[in-house]
Image (cartoon, rainbow, N blue to C red; front, side):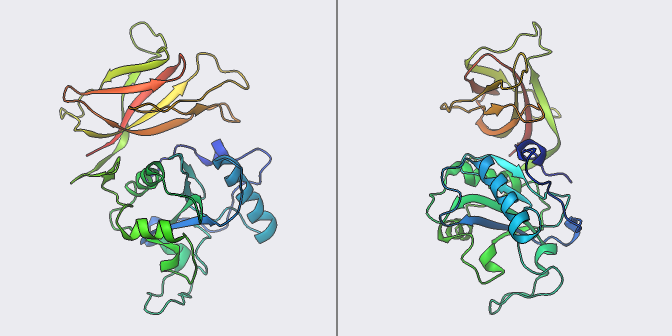
Length: 299
């Protein structure tokens, strides 16, 4: 399987940051837990999510002697980020080979071998946003059905991931069947996203104008998509030049957040969208731009 992110590691890691590497390969075969962490208190103030992740990677390499320890990350913006991903085993949960957990009654886990970890890019005092929760849920529902969610303090004597995130997990807000804050009885993730619109190849091959535009979602295998749908939005400027970029604005319907990466690749933005009874969705863009729309999951 392959977990999809809003930002692959190549898209957020600065060219001046050390590469994320490890001698330990990753396998889903032993993974039992989707394990949630946080960045702690009073760290990285005034930095945005990408700056924070790069600072963590630089801190890990210089202070600990190894790379960014988390499989993935999610921010208050709702964006998800690849970390070690499925390339390398995480390094966020203690010893790899012996059950060194010191919590009474806790099963003696093989720590990093048995977790796929997610760093919530929050401090101890940050209020959780619905977008953060939904971003974590987007990661979670792509994982094998036997993987259950827990928090770092379930496995080690630590305050991580903080009282607020711990309470959210214990209250069931991290749930693979939660879409846009609503529970659905069954949720299906498509192995291959179902592309239903590409302005580059439509009849007039014209980009869409800024503002709100309505699109019809085609049927998938003859079945109409229900109201709970996740759509991957890839926004592409009409002409890519160094320094170009579009910054989406929130609307009542959805948003696109695109910026040019160091390597010139357009950034996908995954959004949960309400679908009307006639199969229509609305997308808001700040500027005239080409876009590709694909359904990646529905329920």
